[in-house]
Length: 292
Image (cartoon, rainbow, N blue to C red):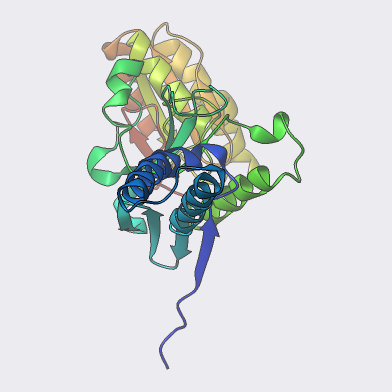
């Protein structure tokens, strides 16, 4: 028996910025039917104008039916009026990012944010420090939803329809392996690493430190804890000066050096004391294929 395909649809009409583009077409539709009505000899009096406005409101409601995001086991489908539906397999998606752009059509006069998908073909290099201008070229993916502000629950009640709508989208994205980005524009969030892990790697890249990361996975005994917490830091200090390293007992330990010779010496010395199944890399990010 074939497995049942689960599907969840979230309509985005509670989100104010999502109405901006449909409202533009509402105005065009109103002008069109008004001109056609006058050309057919209809009066331009109060009742006729109200009828035209009612038609434009109905037209807006029809457009908003096509403003939704659909989640299923294999893909996310994004629908917008006049743009059709676009479906992206989860395997095509590298992560999420917010962008921030002035939208003069927003009735509140705000500059809304957009939560976008970052596709695998356009993903930024992980661990590299990039300026905002450099990051912009990686933040042009399809829009999941438009937002008046980030962290909306901080500004309005958590039971507001718009907040509930946002939270529902975030929860479904997280359910499919894509956690919510940090509340800043152009902060790419990948499911592969935590924001703190990426931040350390980006700082190391910016300052041109030479990292050495030992991925050890779960530490199962006191000897392993002593090795990571005491022996390896002592080896790092002996091999050469450098900034303080970082470690997270559950997965990996990262050591940073000012010179490549010091990093190479530490790698050689560390290889002689760590278990054979622990991995060593010249990156500030842990080895995803290493021990768990």
